[in-house]
Image: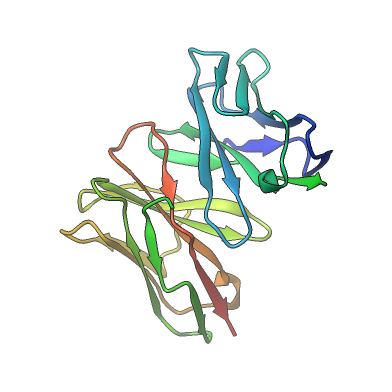
Length: 111
Length: 113
């Protein structure tokens, strides 16, 4: 089946730097994408979403970019903080109600 | 706090046994989703219920079943448990059935000995 994957399994950044987490998706029919953050011992937490009629969406310290031409999604975190350390998943809706998750990227923030 | 409550947090049992995991969705949400998260496979969608009816099915084994009750809480039943069923089981909820954010509980960690 179609799947959503991630380029980098682990990303280590210095506190205060910007982080960029990438995601490639394979289903060209996907039109809604979500980024989740999962901290140890917790469930995935919604961060930001974007629909395919947009190529950029901003939240608080986070920006999601969507490039439909190359089927690529990225999450940018500004001024990364220790509390941002977690596993980040991209997910997309396909086949109606099914949310498909990528494999996850671990973000480690060095103080 | 997502507003989604899952119990129990941890469950330890033996092969061949049966367990029931419980989920209370966010207030007002009609859809409940179940996911399995294991180390080698990430988050896998199992099944969705909407207002008491099964809505979508993913990679759910025949040994597994779920239901959603009139008060909208849901239960996931796992039977004839095998070692490979050890995983985190997450419940998520959303308001409807369309493309919208799903909000997750903190999961039940199931360990099969």
